[in-house]
Image (cartoon, rainbow, N blue to C red; front, side, top):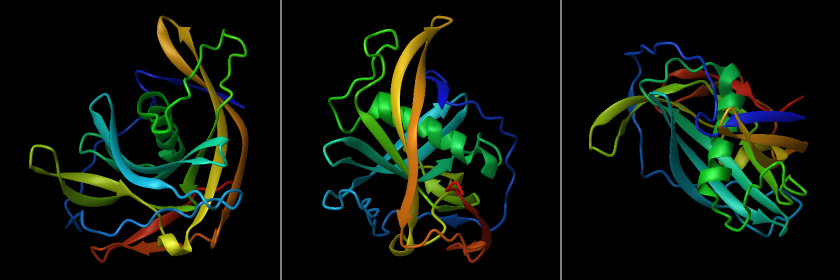
Length: 228
């Protein structure tokens, strides 16, 4: 299975205006971060993080949280824990979850590269595709967007929409896909090509509850992210 992502855009999502003035809470930066459970093939190597990064698509700023590790000396692993859509991003559509995660993954691979070493090659080179394999983990169940106030780098509070796991880390189930990458020039723009090698799931609980009660006391819908 092949897919293409333009590096200067990373993803293309149609977003509509976001208007919400209800159930607003302040995000807490003091919450204890619990690392994700390592996959069973090499459980002795813990994930490192959390790391907070951001990408901008047009006027839409997406801040995301991820963890990373090198698994079994073979895989560059990353776990996308959550992301926040800025005030210019519009209403979150759960059907866009995969597209947003794909854009985040491309940003991690090409621009962040916490693992070091691996360089995405030109598709025309031999053998073309990277020998390195990337595995990207996601929570098995994610929430609908929750409106929260956060403090930005200028010290101002802004309203964002946060999407996060729907169950606690201790009860988390995970799904993942394994990728290889190469890039090519298309209309003078560098485009990232993705080859999917496989997928899997593991964890304590792959069940997705119907609802999640946020810190604001509001009930939000939950959505499964693992393929059936």
